[in-house]
Length: 414
Image (tube, rainbow, N blue to C red; front, side, top):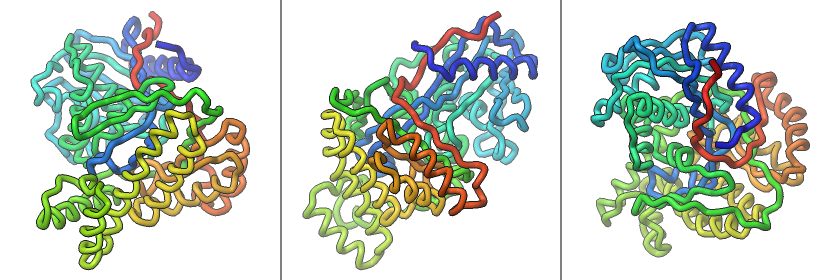
């Protein structure tokens, strides 16, 4: 797999961490997993829509080596306060244990628990060190970590899972069933299947994956994460959980009148309008959630077509429209996220912007012509601290390229 410039910094940080915690990863391997940037449909996975996105070059790295202790021993540079995470495979706390609620240890413990439940081996111990530069909200740090850990534990134990969608399901189960986060499969799918220069198209009706090349005529552009400096709680503590419950309530209300499995089933315009009007009369907020999903789903074919043609301006315009819907109809955004969007819209060459990920806090995203990245960064530096002074020293702008989702690299040297 190709070297990325950020690999060098990661290797140095991982080597320092291994020395600090006396973990032996020399001569082992290094697995790198990406972040993701969803182009459509944000929050569509649990509503049954098709999905489209890319892997982006903010990464999580895990250097690892089997050990003879029979124990898993891990340390994360991103969570130094947790120190060394250590456990015996098969002897982890039960799901949603309070003792793990505020520790990143819930991820490796969750991977052990989920893989064992699935009948997959986890018995062999290993040493590992983790470092990531994925922003803390909106680019799927948790999904990247879960996928990386699953692939690492399987490899250390001499097991393989050929079906990539099973890896996606296992990673989702770590968050759903062990941690208690009600995430869908968007993040895991877009990371695991990501390919450089391609968009990943997921069709839920047959669980198929297709890769869509970006049209040859596309201008130079970057996908930019606008990190607000805010800290988003887990999805189980956020508006995401509320919105998901609302969508389930809307499905239940409509299904009592006509069978549907998800809001995406109402793609026919006449059928949608009939149910939307009736739902709005009794539950206007649920009708707004339905309207967002319907309109986003209607934009989806135009998004794919524009991507295939390299028409990045149209991709950006549709991304912006999606942001308006997420803000006004789905109401999943947050004040700092919208300030970032407001600032981005003032910069020529920013083609589209909206909130990213689970909502409330974290990061917004923008599709930006390459020559506009520096002006965007300057505009954020000038305007965001003034409008959000509490986060004046914590914001960041990350300009990203499109990369493979999973790479196995040579390990740290002996």
